[in-house]
Length: 63
Image (cartoon, rainbow, N blue to C red):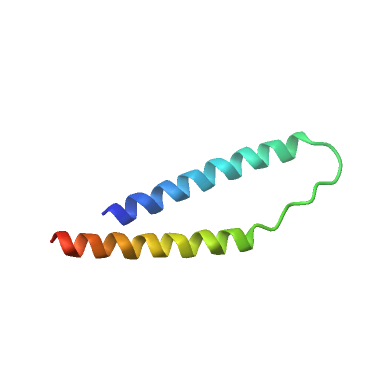
């Protein structure tokens, strides 16, 4: 349950950031290059997996 909440929060933050970044990009004139965030996203994904594992471990200990 907590895992779903954390993932939902991360998705919401990413969506808000994406919309904000997209709006700023549209406001600029000329050719715009979009940065490649794949390495940062991969790092974030591994951190989320680690957090989920720790949360599951804590949940199992509390059960």
